[in-house]
Length: 198
Image (cartoon, rainbow, N blue to C red; front, top):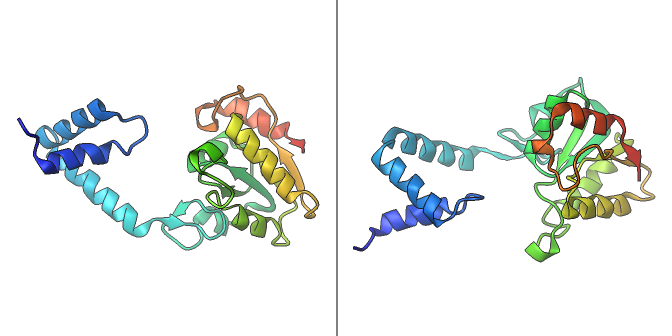
């Protein structure tokens, strides 16, 4: 029996999500069509709205509906500190740890030449410009302790060397190979407190 083309398209579309293989995508599609029409409609509307209205903040590169996000507009943040994280989930984890009161820059990835992700894809030109805005005195590198995260931190450290800003790296205390979004807030807070200069 041939599957309808629109169903094949839905299944294939769901496969773009991380960790979703052909069978999972098929189960999701069947569930949405058979058991949860309202959920499917809500998902479609939310995705369409997000694609239309969400953009990158001009200062920190995080997702926002405004030109400059609420966090970057806050006068309660320390504008002399700039923490560099890989993904928005890492920024959220830092905020939940209540250990950092500076500003952020979200790379939206990490250097991974094998995957075709170089300095341009993670907006290092924008980071360099932000680091030299006259306000920032310290860059805190909080990339993950994976091979790619370490390579990204090293590259950024070299890029900023001699640019008039102090560059620090959060301390190990996080498991090697670990990712920030999966770490408990106490461990993350300790890692930020014990950061070291590169």
